[in-house]
Image 1 (cartoon, rainbow, N blue to C red):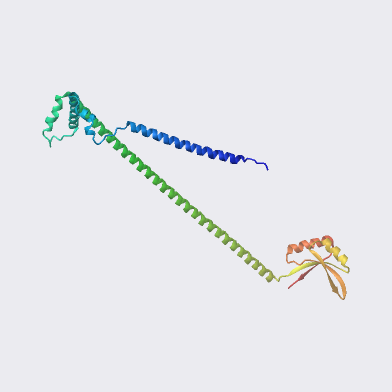
Image 2 (image 1 turned 180 degrees about the horizontal axis):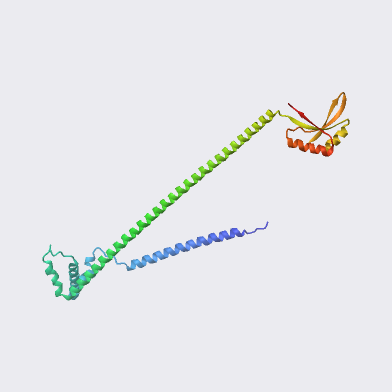
Length: 282
């Protein structure tokens, strides 16, 4: 028995192995990078012990040169002076403020710093005011957009309601027209039936007489058939007995229409010269 490899199974197995290998590589790389990063952070970090007061660094800081200490003190004093000069002073509440404001004039550097701080404070206030105005304008624009959107929605709703009402009106008008057509058809039918009844009554009042044409009376059926064939579809023959003798009478259909009777007379004249018009009924 021969053994054949399924290429799809082989490809699936290779794909699974590749995915597993890729995952292992990613996990290993992540662990290594995490360990390296942690070690680098640990090397750069300086942890202060609880007994740092007894350390050499702290003692060295306490024994800094006098010039460095003086420079630091001067810097702190300047910062405090600038902070005091930047504060707003009310002359009515604090009469001594005028004397305090005249002090920076004796120190040009302090006056320049005070002026810069005032300009920065003014610029900052202007930026805050501009930002507030921008926010207010943005809020107004958003409210205008919302109002415009609501107006558009209301307009669409009104248009939809108008279209719906128009469609309903058209439907009612179409129903009314359909009812009118049905009513007209019913009336026309009733009028036709009434007219037919009236015509029937008129015909009955006139006597209701029907007439037919008798063309010939022969002794053989063949002769009667030949004559009826020449006269056309409105004529036929029938067998009867006269004085004990069998005869065949050729006659037309009975009708009360004068035009039809006249047409049958003309047909009888073409075939035979003599014919008789007979009537039946009252």
